[in-house]
Length: 352
Image 1 (cartoon, rainbow, N blue to C red):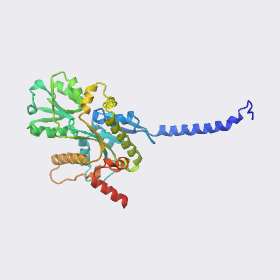
Image 2 (image 1 turned 180 degrees about the vertical axis):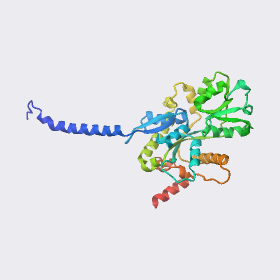
Image 3 (image 1 turned 90 degrees about the horizontal axis):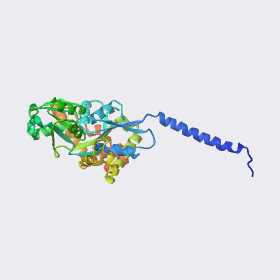
Image 4 (image 1 turned 120 degrees about the vertical axis):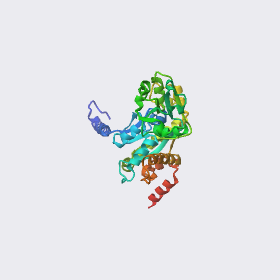
């Protein structure tokens, strides 16, 4: 049959194509209108999994776009999470323990922070950086000095363990609450004699101080867990989103372990850090996705420290079920949930 030179035979096809285009356009408009989900991460090697997941597309899936925003400390990331500015945040245990103590005794609420998983841990992360020409040659020389650190962070907890090991009485030093970005200038001007800092900030601060510095580090006194934290409302109201983020981190950790050299560029977003320095830092970090006894022990250690120094006598104490949300990891990577009591509680709840 000859169609002839007319175009009437195309009209049904064009109509169908037009409907498909319209549907695609409308779905794209809906996606564009949906606000992104934000993860507040860090620029250092502990948070390499966040950058790998983002760059490799492991966060991609049904639902809103996931974006990563960088903060200088886990404390800042937690503050943004609690303010509703981000949906997920990466941090050490100290700022979270501080927030949990502040909330102890209150009714659980949708804004409460909860741990989804540990994504890495290390016992070589924190350092005391001092200026040598002020008569400091060893940690004992810090007695009578001004020590800068960012309060309510893992640096403050590290100092609480470091000082007594080296015979420093808390009354022998003056602690100064100091933002990370101000530490190098404070050292240079003599406003403090030493700072308690962490990688990669210690690298930047050594480069910025135009004086001879020395670094004191302790490997065996503190293992830092790097946590993925969200708000309880995310877990309760958007479980598919929490599962998607956990799945992205699982793939990222697997990639870091399988392709360490291929992902070296994702160890930090700081272009000033050399590949050699990044490799050195990476060797000090264990990447893993888990909820296990190491995390629980670390949290209890932090809570003990805060409660002992601030609240004499009996005090309300956060319980693990108040700050751990095991649902997402139990669905995505159940083999990584190694907290028997919490597993039994979940099984009992599922069967009721």
